[in-house]
Length: 465
Image 1 (cartoon, helix red, strand yellow):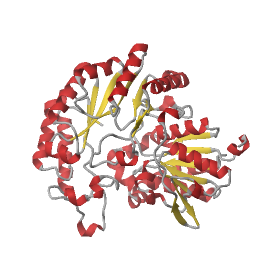
Image 2: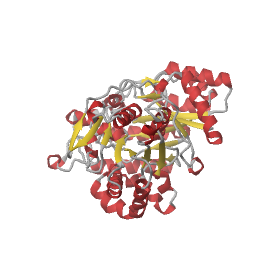
Image 3: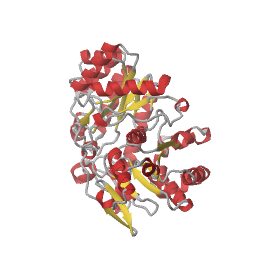
Image 4: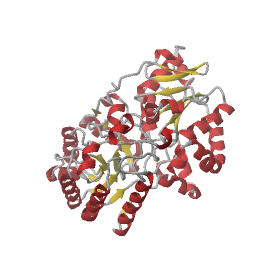
């Protein structure tokens, strides 16, 4: 194919709100890096950042606003009227661009705004080809099967979008591309699924040069060292979605870090590994630490990790020596019964030990919590509160959330709700993620427990994210 063929399918990748702004969006940056390495022209727009920089709209990013973004009726009532001016401006920008492909990264919380903006772009420029990728297309592609959308990417976005662009260039039918859903004569068709066989050691580094890095309030450079998860927590579907678990070799990760440092300069002193867990492959993480320590680099980094026996004090010290300064642990609960029902593999004692060791070594600990799991009794709730009281001196920050939701269609909670006693009133006519009941909890009970959790954190003067 000639360069002109590639130019015909220039692509603009777009990241829409609402998302906490700390780092440029890795998803579209990774796809952009791969497509550019393949010869395609790609632009990127972080419209999430653009909205966040408008101070009067900062309240829209509060966690309490999430439901107003997620559900179409609430979006139309609470969000859309406030964003109309922005949406019109964004639509004009995209429709007047010289990109033929407009791609959006979809999450559960931004589906309504994607469909709204896509409709406006199509109205102004019907010839634009609108493609949606991201986690939501794998979670629930039907939620994005809309008249304004042309293609959905289901799986590893880098290679599937590349294959779709190649097919469009060569005038091939979309049904030749694995891992997509496409619209034809107002009907949606799924092609055969594509196995997640992308070798993470063979893709180009993410492309961050399109972003205004100096405008991110707390800049972490995101980086992926693995994809998927080695656990099967009952509230999550990452293992299902991204199976098999894949990881980058330590040497490849280190080379990628050095490449990004060279490309983006002073903005790259802190890297945040966005993996489901950075310690999914302990030996490779250990090897990465060896390389960093040997090269004596000024690199600080952090990421999400699982609490496990292998996170010994000696190993945690090695992480610190290699530059680790922050670990986000998805502890979710401290009650043995709830941990068992979540299929968590650690005990309360191990969690206490790891948290205290991190603090004493110098690694900040951030705990993510799920309040109101379907089998969480009042005693279980109090066990979690007691755990926080006992360990709060060692915890840098905590995220109690806004109560356990049941919305992930591939998670065991949604696949087998009867196993956890989950049900919705009125036959599930209004089956929202927050309105479910179980034998031991109700929406009002969870709301009260969340308030108690937040009050405890406030009383203990803990940082709440």
